Amino acid sequence: MSSKQIRQIFFFGHIITGVLIMVYIYSPTLQANPTYSALIQFVVAPFIVLSGIGMWQLPRFNKWRSQRRRMKTS
Image (cartoon, rainbow, N blue to C red; front, side, top):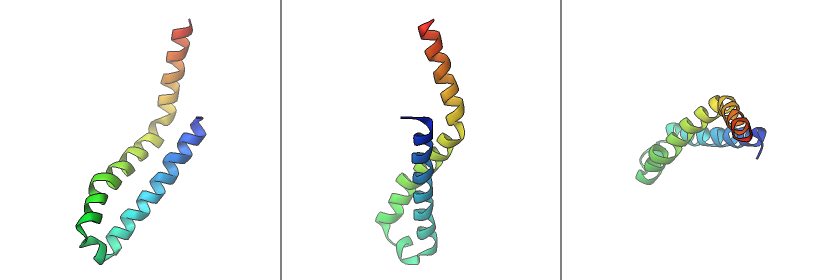
C-alpha cells in the first residue's frame, strides 16, 4: 500500500468520524442515547485523534522506514 493510499484512508476516516462528532454535538436526541455516547467516547474520538496524528507524522514514519530498509540491505 502506497503512502498516498494510506493518507487517503486516514483522511476519509478522519472526515467521517468528524461528521459523527458533529451529529452528536448538534443532536440532543443522540446525546441522550447512552450507546451512541459510548461509541463517540471510546471509538470515534480516539480514532479521530490517532488518524490526525497519523496524517501528521506519516512523512516522518516513511522516512524512518526507508532508512531502516537501507540499513538492513547494506
